[in-house]
Length: 526
Image (cartoon, rainbow, N blue to C red):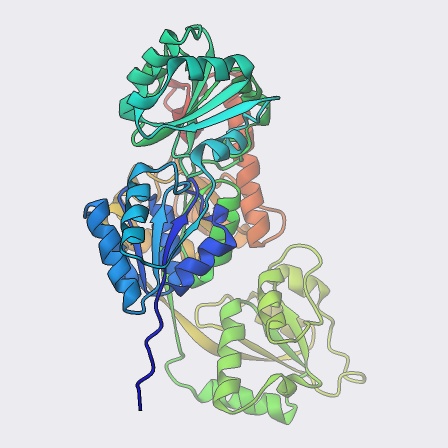
């Protein structure tokens, strides 16, 4: 009896696009997800490396390569013959890349099964992201070997429309000479874009005569747009024009809690940094929660009031311990302090009966909470599962409305460990442009484990109680939404940033010490 033959793997050369993980194609995502090994070189942006780790799910498979193209091609071909699927990540598109082509040829010579998955080039992406769309004719060139460029070909392309060129910073002087030798006017408009589609993409506009000097400080590959398309940039640029573009925003929450916030901040152009200040732990003694769960099943309560996503999670975990499901809420009315908490309830297939119509806070919920009617409400008790450090506002308000309240500790919040030294230094020295506080405890704990944010850091608070706590700690509150929700908090910060940029456009901003500051640095001062 013959043994089953081991399936042969494939080598996939994956064009990853210019740097924004959102531009990965479905084929690219599939190749990364299915790979037994993922290879990349030093040109791959860190954002794409992190995305590959998340997509593949096993960081040990993501490997940096430093061998020659020939050796790397042979290595990948050998692994494919052993049944492994390989994803070789390449910046932009594969075929304009000289080293990638050498690896593909080497893998082909070894008779490996391979695929080439195209990706968007830097040049194509910058035309859209930096607001310089093609005119009637646009020529796109990825320069891999500056010596091979024909001056007259480039000059002719510019005469017919805009030219977009991807090149290494070290080749810019040679490229300028080629343009001038081809007869291109030194006054022709040029835009230089670095970190294309990345979190720190930055574009400067100049001319053929001056673009080398304008690119000082750039590193690695840059994209040059040459010709009439540059004039459209001031009106059509959107990536760098987002309200929080380039802002480093501190989120004092765990990665699990901050996920939605971080994604929304990235959509506004910000660079979020998640720093846990609170750790959630079970109650010291489980007796209270055990009685509460039994009371839920026995019909002891008319209402359950959830004040946080953690309280929802704590109740649901107890349900699972006892083999219960959503049917245990039958006949029970559910109130939530805000939309985020309500969404956590909805995840379990249940729609809350009551939310605040105005301010999403304890006060807002009390404004709409019905008083106890002893005739209509046969059961007059409310279950309030929450943190051990919660305020008494809800208990007092519900009691005044005639309800008996079982105030149960569902979880404890304890201070997290201090963040890394570089994060602490950035917090205290103004390395963050803004900080978002979502509760009073996040204020207290951030100051406790890392110190007070620098006075030039913009402080945004989710609601009045959080803002009051920030003020008590000597922080200036710059932004606060009308409704206490994460989307509204981020929108309030975005509106503040927009107003700040408008003030900067009108002239120098005066600091508290009377200094006049202009340029991007001025955005850090009020």
